[in-house]
Length: 315
Image (cartoon, rainbow, N blue to C red):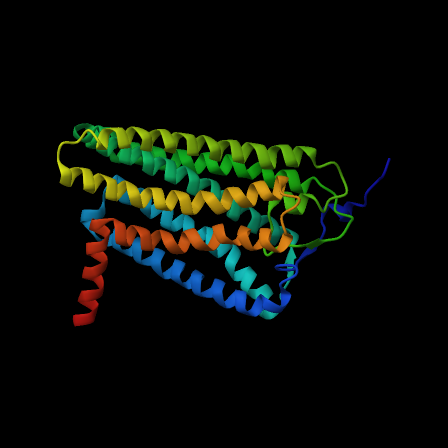
């Protein structure tokens, strides 16, 4: 039986190499990521500010949008700044606690984003299918319970990943061919059986996210059935416009995320450079595009954004 040194359970630090095979383009890729990150931070901060100060936006839909904006900021900030330091400064080293912290916030915010999208789909279902009962079903107390419930659920799903990694001995290479730490990628560096890491780290979060997707699909199927039964053309267009923005956000979020996860588990023929590049999309693209989509597609938000900038322009 192999006996590992105690020091092997505290590996010190890892090396993040960025995007293997594209090292000569790191500078330019970093500029692109930086621009997208700035758009994400500015856009989400504007959303947070408007929802916080405008009383007319103190509705359940905008409360969930507030949560989505905050989670998007966590998602992008957990990954992009470290990626830029790798690309521009060559700061590839990351401590083991730092790696675990980054991994937790990336995975937690991803699972929480999924749960928030599910809550937003439920909000739209109640608003369109039971409009007269909307205020009695989605009371402030109920909204707080939903927010606390999905936040706690996401925390409980991701926290075991940390303990599953801290139990592993690391006596092989500590080079991670990626721009950020993620559970299975770090676990594969261990010199021990990681079957439980693969089972839990892949199956449990994915099953939760898939259940969210199924509930979202059911909600929007019922919404579409209700919308096409509306007699008013204006009401139908308004409902479709609101739901359209949600569907855009859902597709932008799940498409690159699922591709990255499935490619990491099954896509052995997928180019590593392409896989890592695509894996970065779901931590930079949705947080940047969500404020733009909601700002353009949601009339209440669009009016407030126009008012905000027109007031500053004349001031």
